[in-house]
Length: 97
Image 1 (cartoon, helix red, strand yellow):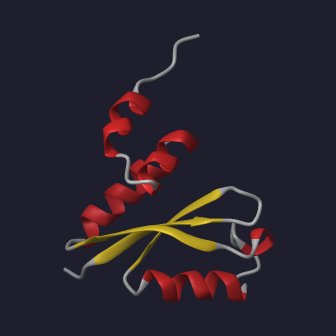
Image 2: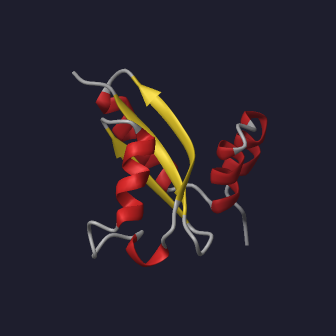
Image 3: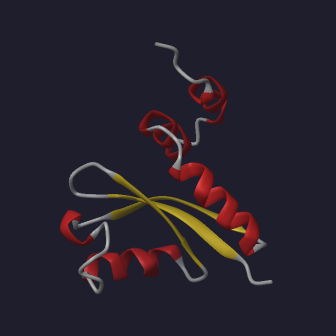
């Protein structure tokens, strides 16, 4: 099975986009900035910049990581981008009302 990257883009409006690619994440970021897909999340939020990428040997592991990260809070994504791994468990705890 081929390897893949999970990547996070920061959009011009400050939002994060989490994606998956089997190619170079910088190349994929350039494609987002070109606006090739007018229906994509990033199209109206350009320019975007690559703020995080992680390589996975197995694409299935990358798919699982992408799905997991997409469900994270903004604060937890920011900790991952900073590579502040110690903060992740604390940010993983659900808030009670």
